[in-house]
Image 1 (cartoon, rainbow, N blue to C red):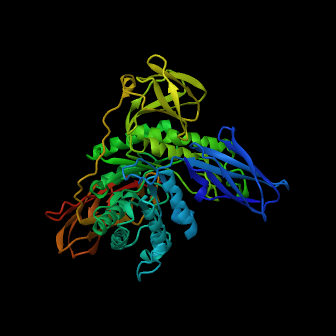
Image 2: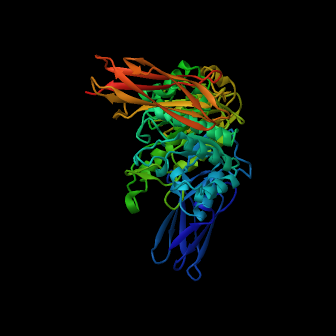
Image 3: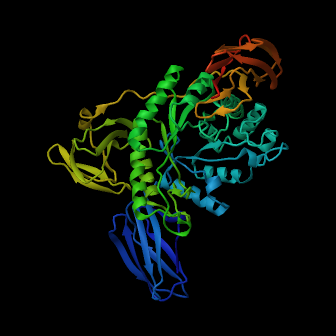
Length: 605
């Protein structure tokens, strides 16, 4: 027996019946619909004709359900079902804050499934998705670009009104022929051209771009000096292709370490629009990590940048089904509970947008991250994410409400539906909340609403690990909310220089410390590449400023043609007792204010 929903991903909407088709069944099919908490909410039977039957179940409130079907031969089938708020054709807002990583160009296969996936995202009310494209895949040789299935994916998402934020983190083999394992192309003009062509070609479908994934770990096999150059070239190309495109620097994922610090020393401030980071940790730790990044940004006058948290997931093992890629019921509940906590703490930390990782089925080293099963039916987490997007998607964080109960948390947001309090607890507890009206609407973790009656000037709510939303709770509660400082965040008026300098050494590296390793008593060659991504010919000087060593020559004169490249070499000699050497590439091209490039070196032990 086979049971399938009549909508993509079995994701139905409120106010409409749940319709399923049954094939290869015998006799009468009996069914039960059971909710997330194990309560039977509907049951019935359907007659089978020629092995087929139609199941129609009355409309259900938002929630996660399991449909249990049995025929007369004893064949049983369980189907995962989601019900979300019917948006009635309303567009998903560009300003929406509750988003998701999708990577559907890689994790979903085939045109039918890509169409179904885009429909699921739109139905769930998720306004932005993070996608993937492979430069090496679309440009296997130098002859041109073939957008392949990435074109189809971009088109179907755009047709559903979904905003796309795209990333690439590879380079074609032909761009570094002498070093097959490299990530950085030999000539950054290839990066500029690809970025320009991609952003221009997809200007209608793709609104934002990220230049590389997690370059502070092994997704980038080089140091921050070369990544800074790649980012600058890519930024200029992306903006030349589509001036309206938003550009995010490569997502930082290990906190404020050497890579992050050195990267900002290399003057990337005018070469990204939005600060971008990842975290896989308990949500209560999000604010502290972003605060540390904010302090780093402030050192370079960038503390007013918007921040997007573009990957936030929970590591749970797949243990069930074929290939052990399905989450157990216990882990489905953990993932579901994680979703609103993660969203709330991300927005409370000051992120402008939050991206759950990840929508499609994705098993990595035994860990299942997806909110969808392999057949694209939902886990409870997808319905919980939809509720977050609908209730908090265009919200403004007001502060934390003190529950007075250990293990219980509550946070207040201003929304189009009034002030909304989101609360949860590690164990079942009861709290009272100020309320100005006789009744208040209460939504469960999936967005199903009920009415609470006030007693005096407050309402009593039951908290559990599954978050609840107290909607339009009024203004009195704000007097008890712990105030938050104003959250910085606006798009910058960048003035990137079109002359880009990149310095690097052909030495072993220590990725963790973001430094090259030199041998005591030995000098080495240091290469500086100068690019001009503009019109006319520019002339100037390039010099090295060192601590812990000396350079020969210290300064060189150079002339670079339009979209030209020049390569200079210097010989660096570390001081006799130097443990560390810092190299800063400085340039003087007159009116062109060229950002520096900084490299760090450490004596090899």
